[in-house]
Length: 126
Image 1 (cartoon, rainbow, N blue to C red):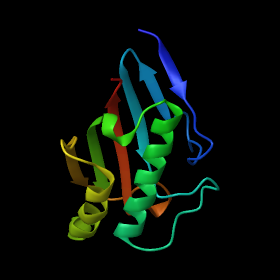
Image 2: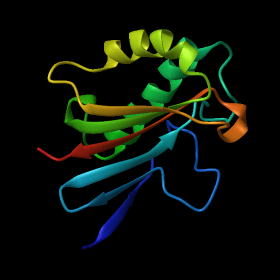
Image 3: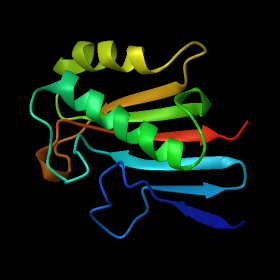
């Protein structure tokens, strides 16, 4: 199956040998987005502010693919402190409408650039 890279100038560039997103068939896979702006600098603040930026980045890659947050069917949230889950969850809930995507949230020991949150997503073309 053909893979087409998705690139958005409104989300931070990949910091390694990977694409911001890839379209294959009717599915779009968004690489983990850390809470960085287009300059690559992390946003200030805690889990809430970082979740907001991660989801903005996810949205911008989706827009580059011609999709919206409503097309997301699965996300994975990586956090360095699950004690901050309520703050992340409150912001996350503002970005999705019912029916909500499936989700896994896992605690990890570290994330790139010392981020506290990273979010990846899978979307399906309507």
